[in-house]
Length: 447
Image (cartoon, rainbow, N blue to C red; front, side, top):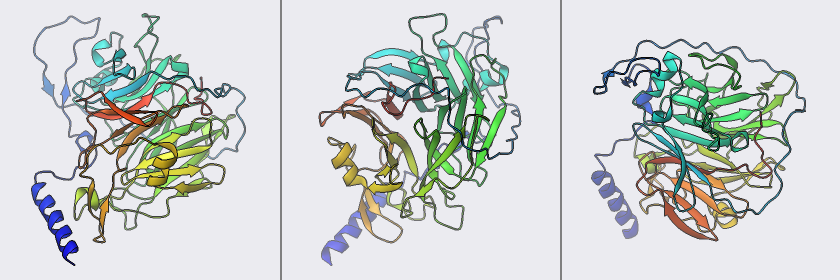
């Protein structure tokens, strides 16, 4: 009895001390109509008028009307690259997105020494007006960073753009060029958190919203296409909400996505369950099959009041979907902890402690304040909560970014080698860091 009273006293004291910290809806400032844009420097063909940046309200953006979906039959792809060979090679390159105005994408070694970087100041090519407008917005996002196209390109969410950028440091003429871009200043992509290449020079972009029409938009990302203000939407797949992670599965010819089955923000009258869903790929049509046949929900739905306090309406949702090298298993992080999913049995088989003991020995919590009461009044400690991004190497080394408690991002990258953790990128505001390499057993499409 005394211990329960003392626990409640600590909780109330913690709530009072944190009154200045208000729950934040992720990326809410990006909603169209609530933004300011920094006027970019003139394009290379325009005269440059030196002077301070001007803040202005953007004009109405082009409209986007998602096209209807179709449901093709499943056929194997004849053009996919061979799977990566099993290897215990030493991985040194890590890619990290750093929040700021402007944001920064950087590839660095295990000590944090930068080998290559990209920001909007590196852009010298001509851009369509709306793409340029969105590049120079005041959005500070560096939400996604991925190795693609055999390491010759990067997939990223940067500022108000979904991007593909050349990574060819040995060829300065092509290095750092934007080859695909779509602006997020619209009701469909304003909160987009992730993208994943598909065969046939296509790319899937998660809309990461809580509406019934949220899900995945598919675009043609061929480098042969010129950049345009409004890339054509090839496919619109709705239903899976709050998508934060996607992975291409070469073996099953499937795109896997992690999100929630209902509104993560609590706007639906039912709980939202963390969900992994597979979308089979049809090589003949180039489309994904929209089916619930490969939908797998976590056994429980959890509220987020433990972290954000009483009355917070959001449900816990996934943050990242990470394959185990050379294995048919996923690790999935979400707001309250970790889970493992076996693709052979189609079952979730480990929760947080089991994931740490089996795959992530050496994990250490970033801060010790990750505790509170859930909606049912139960006191919980959540040391494995809020891994916004993490990545596994074939030798067992791994990197992870854990957001600070009651904040949306972390302030460093954790690197664990042989069970020993070190911290790099200290002081950076980070959402994700990943190994910059092709994952053995999980090759990304080469084209």
